[in-house]
Image (cartoon, rainbow, N blue to C red; front, side, top):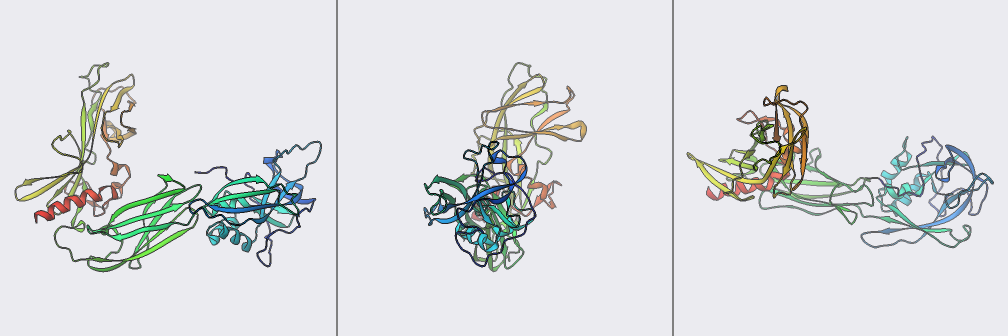
Length: 484
């Protein structure tokens, strides 16, 4: 998400020379505090001026400091530069919208300030110096030769921002006009990276920022090319996004089926800040059933339906239908294949998350219910109104299918618990044309579209196990191994 955190305003991408300073010093800039009539070129739209202009400015002192929102640490004030546009009476009326808080576009200065803001100095410099620069960067020219940018961009690109600017009571020359406190955040961290007893890698990783909080994780095994295993930008609390999951060892790229493996996890936020941790994982020679034995397949790809053909002419237009049920399950046949399917019926004899066992000849069959949904519908003027009457907190997700066009999907609908949605039939065709297909949570993610194998049902199959199914499949395997 992007918010107006900067003290400045819209972007001006100018091709400007870069000021070169010998060392990082404060205050920075080419002019002493209190200097007047300094020409400043840029977009002054926040002051009510149109387009890029050259206006005279006064160089004033504006002190800033940084406050880490998680650790509570507050740094000391440092002196920075604010260019205040001088009014041209009687046309100008800037009131309190005339100050431009700037820093010279100098690599050493920018990196030093980014470091103080707890940012990745090298990454920040790349974002502000490239052409065009990052969208939060606004460029200005002083005296037609010196390049400056807005200080707020440095804070944002360091994972911080949202300044609290307070009048400091100074004259701008010997003391500051303002004192601003910018929020900052820590770099990412990996509190947990460990091998579990059930054949998985337990991960807990954190990333922080004031805006655009997200986390991405990649895994490298035994020096192999890194593979992205997760990305997340939801569930943000206290400027933090947390990824926590158990990843099957069988899904790690390049892992050896026996012996010791070096696994390296790297997590990154949206601001070039990273954390990395490595552990040694010992994989024992398989004994009994393990995830590596399993072929995962989708049995009902293109078959499962909700409520059958629409509309059901046996239901009066003003009468709500009887209840329908869908059960999402995983069934393991022996220790070779786990079939994921959605089928009609509530399966009252089975509890969600509990493994049940049956026998087909000499082959044991283990089933676990992943979730259940229930629903009703009634006719509407354009099709039907579908009502989600489930106990499940997961939404009922369905596709409207057209059987006269090769079972082409027309539109996807998502109905939250207790909600309803009108499903519109494009054509009033009562000859069994339209039907509803249930889409389970894994299929919603596009997982099966990436499958490279086929099952005995000629349906998508894979050796990869998605995180949503890892726990359930481990329970099936554990039940099998207890019996064998």
